[in-house]
Image 1: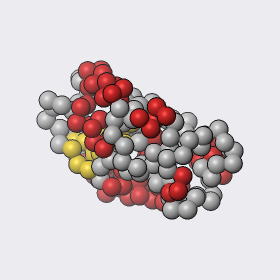
Image 2: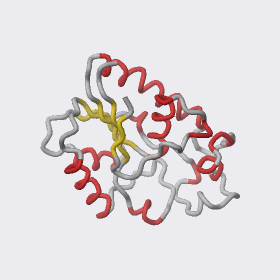
Image 3: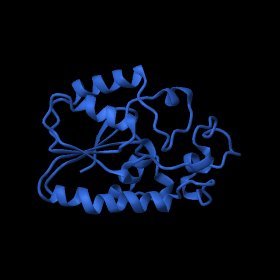
Image 4: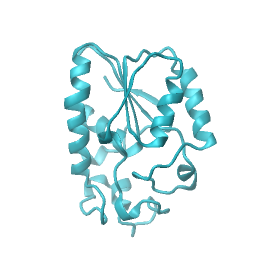
Length: 186
């Protein structure tokens, strides 16, 4: 493959700041998140992108718009880039530290996340949709020598990173990226 692939996580939202599990709840950026995206636009202004694929959720869309402002980079939205769906757990707090939380394993022992809560995606679901996205959209563009940016979310980005780097599920979070941190994958 002759193109480059970059991935970035959206800026912070009010829910990030309150440690609430967002999932697919469509939360916009906070003032801090907007500032992070503006700083990222300056920091990464010399990184070349031919095309941007973005989650349609507001926090990712706003990040892409700010990051690419003034640049001639087309942005394409794809539902397969939405954050992982956490079902009835979206909006909860304490999900990371509470061993009784139905999503605690996902964040602490992802290889043991076998029983998603009601309405939630499994890791297999997440890997299937992001894997199809890579096969159908990303790899063909890389083969054409295009430099690609993906603007997404914590878990969704980790699924893409895990597939590209062929990481075991136990290492799902090992390459996690902070809000508005750009990572080159290929």
